[in-house]
Amino acid sequence: MNIWLYIVLVSTVLASGSLVFLFKAGDQRVLKLLLAFSGAFLIGITFLKLIPEVFSRPTMFAGVFVLLGFLLQLSLELITEGAEHGHKHAHSDDEKVSPFLLLLGLCIHSFLEGMPIVPGFDVKLQHTLVLGIVVHNVPISLTLMSLYLHYGCSKTKAFIYLMIFALMTPFGSMFSNLLDASLTGALTTGFTYILAVVIGIFLHVSTSILFETGENHRYNLQKFITVCVGLAVAFGISVL
Image 1: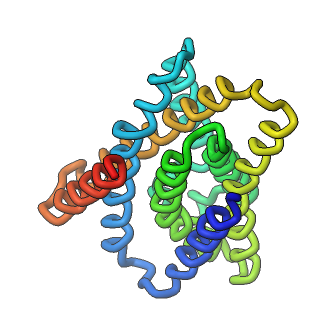
Image 2: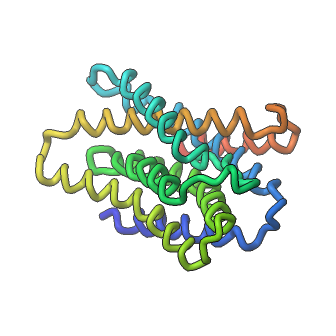
């Protein structure tokens, strides 16, 4: 049932990672605009669609799990140093992050994002979540490929790492679907809490992007318009 969603998730990562060869190493303008749009879109669907879904259900401690997701993402960035929101740029060998740890942190991040993509939520919410992940993964994929090439990985090895990252969100969804099938009806509340954790992750990533996307934390008109467009698209998706 979710095969097309999985194909979209994987192909978007691979296609986005390939775009790194189209940009000059020193040109960050396009990436910054992508980051601004993705951050605005992500926080938009989080407030307009995901948070109302979680807090409309009869669950206790949902807010606690949102905070846990926020803190979990904060702890993952001790490993990835901000690659989830496109702000890890290697300028020297002293700033080099272990490629394995970088991949591990991003895979955990991606796996968790895929776990709420289950039939326990309506199709529209699943599609909204997938769209948010897709938009979010574009700058991540560009950053990941740039870093691995900077660290001296061959193109083949870099694409293998990118493929592993691309598969993690579908794997997270598959894992949840297997649990749902084997424990029918017992995980409805559990999936709601998982979505709350993902909301916390999205809030951390999107606010990091929006606060850091401008030079000296200031927005020029182009970036401001990009953020407004991202919020408008999120609003349109949420009300359709």
